[in-house]
Amino acid sequence: MDYRRTYIKGLFALPAGTATVAYGWVKTRRDSKGISFVQINDGSCFKDLQVIVNEGTIDAETLKKITTGACVRFDGVIVDSPAAGQAVEMQASGVELFGPADPLSYPLQKKGATMEFLREIAHLRARGNTFGAVYRVRNEAAWAVHKFFQDRGFLYLNTPIITASDAEGAGAMFQVTTAVETAHGEYKLRTNEAAQDFFGKPAFLTVSGQLEAETVALGMTNVYTFGPTFRAENSSTSRHLAEFWMVEPEMAFCDIEGNMNLAEEFLREVIGHLLTKSEEDLAFFNQRIEPQLLATLKHVVDSSFERMGYGEAIKMLEQSGETFEFPVHWGVDLQSEHERWLTEVKVGRPVILTDYPKEIKAFYMRQNDDGKTVRAMDVLAPRIGEIIGGSQREERLDVLESRIQELGLPMEAYWWYLDLRRFGSAPHSGFGLGFERLLMYCTGMKNIRDVIPFHRTPGHAEF
RNA sequence: UGCCGCAUAGCUCAGCUGGUAGAGCAGCUGACUGUUAAUCAGCGGGUCCUAGGUUCGAGUCCUAGUGCGGCAGCCA
Image (cartoon, rainbow, N blue to C red; front, side, top):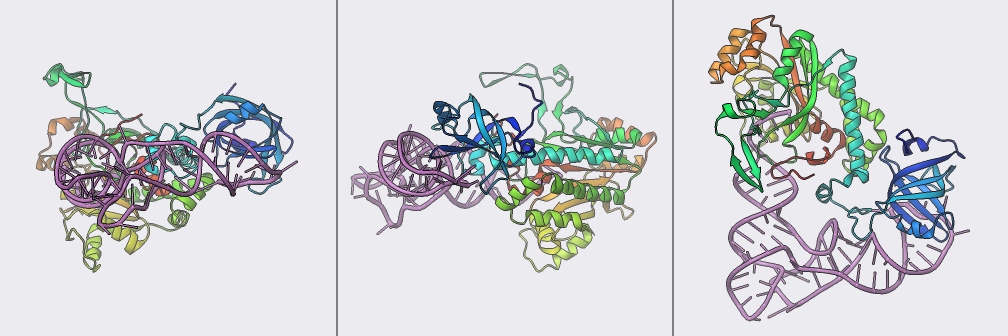
């Protein structure tokens, strides 16, 4: 056995008459008099291979054990299918049963499972249509992310997962420590001094690689990170994970306009890539998960995003005639209901908002000359809200220092970040994109826990 | 963390103003020479989430807890 083998995807392309081998897991078996139909899938494509087993070609006892979930190898010949439903199929001449799956206890059925149930058996759900498609699209999207940046000369950068800098000063973090011992579920303090802890100071799981990415961009020009990030917020919604993957480009010599252009180009290219490379899987999502999916994705690829200033958006919301739970006026942060109205009702496609009041944005965003707003830009998508958050960064030392001071942040902690402004500073910009949110948008999946193989949320770290 | 909803067969659900539980699918047995969420016939399958309470009697009503989900906040 060797990985170098034709996957089921490739078997469909073989000319009729080719003798070959198919490995996979059984989706379903249908028996008729004298003939059995076994559908198997190995994850290489959405479509199952139909294997024809004529009575007598394989041992009857073995055939009986070829039930949903079993793992098998079929030897046979690829033939044109006489029936509708598939162009080609395999005429079996032999079989090896690697692992049976007891039909009484195997939890995956041919139909009718909810996403919630499948989430409980996440170790088995890769064998179903929906999650096979999700995982393939996730893979294809990750590839497209790298391709997009590599094609443009961006450097792929790995930023630390354990960090001692509370980067953005916002968002609860997971502490990484050896100062606590656990035994039988009990916590025991080993030391209560930070200096005695593993790193000699408090350390955390990263919430963003941005600050580190900035340091490398101011030396290597265009960089991007693509890795896991962590938030210890106790938020239980269909759009939040405690562990999620983020794509963060950072560009020297780039202003907010260039940043928006990149964000838009990025989303259009990744989605365009999926439309051609994941056609079968997207067709499935369109049929079973989200009826408007293909139309929406094509629309995004073909049209430019709506760009507007925060102030303009506030005016529109004020004049919308809608009654919002949270009233709107200049200075407030936009709530979900406002974002939804803008993207879903008013515009009907992604919207890029810029120039937010500085009070509701992070300290590192570049201040505009009005002294009130910063060069932030958020890309809002219908159905899922904020998919990208970015900004032009404050490159002026004095302005950045006074901002840190104003917000009462610990100046010492940012010594290296400020050094970037001290030595060879440059205008630069970047953004962060939540990879799982992008996948929700591209698959139509309704819960973010279902676009990552094993989700981490408050109270849940199974598998 | 707050508000709301749900918890009944392996899965998806029904179960009326309270009277000891039902369907479809899956499974098993059989039928059918080309099925495709196969079809047809038959069979088996229940701690009604947990703990209290009200009642002659609770799947059903009340309280608390647990789990799951939705929305909101926080954000990506």
